Every structure is written in structure tokens, then in C-alpha cells.
Image (cartoon, rainbow, N blue to C red):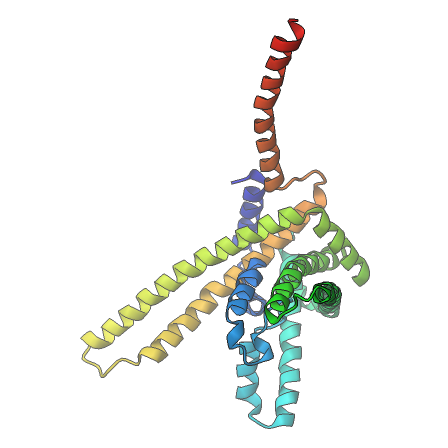
Length: 342
């Protein structure tokens, strides 16, 4: 593993272990996902493959990465609290949305700030301090996503107009254009929002200045950000896979316990649901906290170092040098044998 990424992962891991109090805040950070930016690509490919079976707008590809909340959580929440009345449902949705947004963005600010604290701190005090950043963090996220959506819509409209002029336009081409335009823009917007929020929380810059700095930092370190996001995705998949195996072992153990105890037929579905919910909170919350700590650690390193190069660029330079060596040797041999000795 590259020393830069290894050091960043190790520093984030050390901070994660030292700040166990932040694990609880991962419960709220879970609502914006733990898979990372490349999950957008995977989910969009799945939705495009099922395009013929689309029945609602929710079946369209997820172009704007990292929604503010998990729609399943919100849906179940206002079903539980407000029932089926249209007005109450709308008011309940708004209330749950505001509460979820407050918890998510304040938790994000607290974790970013706490992950870089060198001295001891009170989580309660830090939470009260970072409440003031809720509106700024929320506004940064909304502005970045909105700007990217407008830019993507303009690019998509222009591309569709050009293709239509040649008579090649179809539903399949339109969906392909949606994927090609909005997926990379969605990933880019996720990086920009992450860095802009970090600028706001750590350096306390103004909202628009934070967004500007986030764009510059992301553009300057885009490949490093992409490589880091790939690492986050692999870590999330690995931990999720191991957790799934452990959860299935627990489920089978409980079922066997019911069978050997002579109890009636075991309630398999409630058992599976309970075990997976427990594992989701026990594993997902710390994982979400670690990922946020990792991005805060990476952000700090990117701000402090001006001469970082991505592993991809270094690998390509190495290949170029290795390919160039034989060519130089052949050229020198040719000059020596056919030109200089005449």
C-alpha cells in the first residue's frame, strides 16, 4: 500500500480508537451512507439495467450522490408517528426531515472538529459549539448539489440537442447520457461538499469561500480523492461482508437453539430482522464515524502538503520511464552503429 494512504488510514484509525465517543454520532452519519462515492456508480448501473421495468421517478438513477437522509428511514418514521393523513403526513415529513438534517449535519461538523482535536474535549460542549455550523453545513451541501444539478442539466440538454440533430436520439441514449453526465458530476459534488464543509468547520471560512476552496482543493487532488474513495468502498464492502457472515452465523445459532430447546417453530423472519438491525447499528455506526474521520484526516493532509501526486500518476510515470529506457538504448545503439562510425 502507498505510504501516503497507509499513513492516512493509520492516523484515522488511531483517532477513531481514541475518540470512541464519536461512534455514537455514526448513528446519524449512517443516514447519508457508508459505501462512499463509487456506490453511486454501482447503483446507477443497476437502475439502468432495470430501465425497462421502471414504474416511478424513484426508479431513475441516483445522480446526486449522498442524499441527506435514507428515504426508507424517513418513510418508516412518518408512517409510525403521523399515520396516513395527507396534511399530517406532509407536516410529519417536514418535521422528520428537519430533525434528521439537524442531527446529520451537526454530527458531521462535530466529528470533523473532534477528529482533529489534540487535547481532551467534552462531546457535549463540542456539540453545543457546532450547532452554530448546522445552517452553514446544510447550506453548503444544498448549494453544491444544486449547482452541480444545474450544470449537469445544461450539459445534458446540449448533448441531447446535438444528438437529436443527427436523428439518433432514443430513450436508451437519453438514459446513457444521464449516467455519463450526472454520475461523474455527482461524485465530484460529493468531494466538493466534503472539503467545503471541512473548510467551514476547521478554518471557519465563509460559506461561499468554503465552497470555492472546496472546488479548488478537489480539482487539484481529484485523482487522490478518487483513489481514497475507492479505498473507502473496499473497506466498507469488506466490513459489510464479514458482518453479514457473522449475522448469518448468529441467526443459524438462534434457530438451532430454538429447535434443540423443544420450542415451537422459531420465528425466523423476526429473528433475522432483529439480528440484522443490531449488526447494522453495532457495525454501521462506527464505520460511518471512521469514514468521516478518514476524510477529515485526508483533508488536513491535502491542505498541508502542496506536492502530492496520486498513485495512478506515479504508476503511469513509472511505466513511461520503463518503456522509454529500451527506446533510448535502441536509439543510442542505432546512432553508434549507423551514424557515428561512418
